[in-house]
Amino acid sequence: MKVTKEQIYEQLEYVMDPELGIDILNLGLVYDAIIEEDNHVKIIMTMTSMGCPMAGQIVANLKRQLHATLPVQQVDVEIVWKPQWTKDRMSSYAKIALGVHA
Image (cartoon, rainbow, N blue to C red; front, top):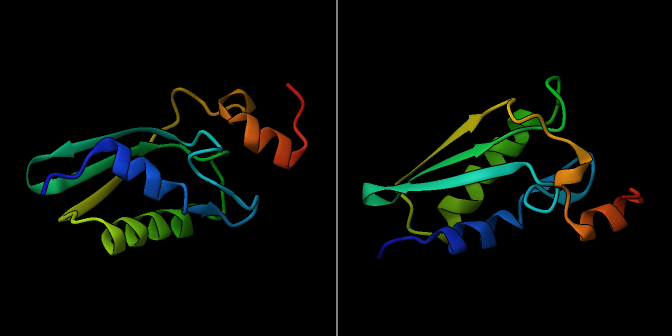
């Protein structure tokens, strides 16, 4: 069974940023999900800052979530810094929850 990008994004809504209490998808941290042969998944994402102390935990939780819920063989995460994350990438839900004004 081939995994879809939609299935991956649905599961990423369960991966929280422990400091902010909002999922990484609504925070706008995920830039892309690439599905290669044999359900090998590559997630391209960023963090809210280069020194994010929760980066390791977020990546571990992301991998755990996808392995536990989807038939993925391997999950690789590439952290990128361009384009740089800004509050503009956040969903309306995340902005309201965090009290961020547009």
